[in-house]
Amino acid sequence: MATDSDGQMCVYKDTLLAGLWRENPVLRLLLGMCPTLAVTAAVKPAFTMGMCVIFVLVCSNVMVSLMRDRLKPHLRILMFTLTIATFVTIADLLLKAFQPEMSDALGPYVPLIIVNCAIIARAEACASKNPVLLSIIDALGMGAGFTLALCVLAGIREVLGTGKFFEIQVMPEAFVPWAALSMPVGAFLALGFLLGLVALITQKRS
Amino acid sequence: MRSIRHFFEQSWLLIVASFFFGLLIAITNAALSPRIEQNRISKLNELAGGLLPEATVFTAVTESIEITALDGKRQTVPVYRAETNSRTVGWVFQVVGSGFADMIELVVAVDAEFQTIAGFDVLSSNETPGFGDQIKGSYYRDQFKGAPTDGLTLVKTGDATAIDSEIVAITGATVSSVAVVRAIDHYLPQVKTQLQQKGLIGNGN
Image 1 (cartoon, chains in turn red, green):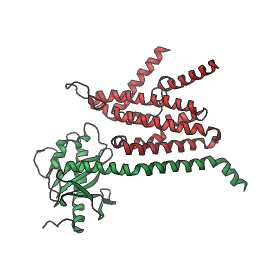
Image 2 (cartoon, one colour; image 1 turned 135 degrees about the vertical axis):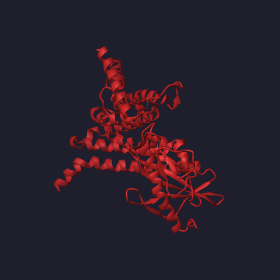
Image 3 (cartoon, chains in turn red, brown; image 1 turned 60 degrees about the horizontal axis):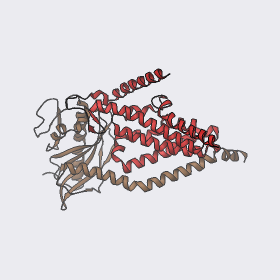
Image 4 (cartoon, chains in turn brown, yellow; image 1 turned 180 degrees about the vertical axis):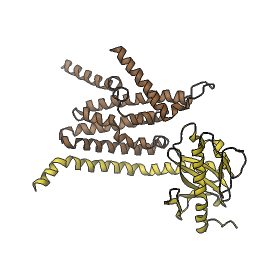
């Protein structure tokens, strides 16, 4: 029995860590690129977006996992989308009620979580085949990986683009902000360099 | 009969889930909508309060103020009366213009007689950071304070500190500068005429 539960723990740990690095949705699988490029001009909106994605991922994974035995194969994508859309709408309403400033800053990108591939990919690859607990752990790992990647990218762009971090001035007065990094072009450049760096690290490791 | 049975066998989960999720959204919406509406009102009040500091209450005008928007469509403009001790000190209304990348929503405040602009603030915009979004900055916004309501003109160079109908554009952000002036110029006379027609303000003679 002991080895059984040990093996189970190992699976949980592995699932949790997979989302953070090995199968990181943004840096390794290149899923969910739209919010990655659009809301990473500053750390605060990026972090809020990450939290919304974690909420939607956990809720949709739980729902999909609960109905996994009753899913008709040809209706499954429809069921996933319905589930995800419901929780995204709820997340949007929560944000409007409790974080109106962030809701304004994120604009249409919160409703657009519905079409974020990272979420439907987890419903298809994990939740529709695994029990609830494992699906939750998978959602937390993937969500954390997504949030982390967004915050790293946003951190680079905010510090160099405005001289601030989390809206607090960190660069010396003499620093001239690289305004281009706050613009869409900066998102592509910073993401490109970040992906290059990640590829370099993984190559060195193997 | 068989086809109906087949239909339900295949789709019962979808039907049940749709009802369940619909209910879930309805409950969340019912629970949160008063708070969301409150947030919207307080944001508008906060912006309007900054433009007309002497005003203590902003009440929505019950008469419908309908104007032609920039795209030619008829549109109802939300207008608010700013009051101090039940004396009208100004008017606040919402303006929508098309900016460089997206629509720009503004809150414009004018004095009680609709003679001068008290100022404007940006409710929502998506202008380029570092360039177009300087329409939120004091250099540009302060030029509107005290400007006449009968037509503004945008100039590339000039004295930005002078209180007149000339608004000096932001360097490198001409499109955004033009958008704000055009939108305000378009809405002001129409809202003024409407308010005069409804007898809410004098006709200026």
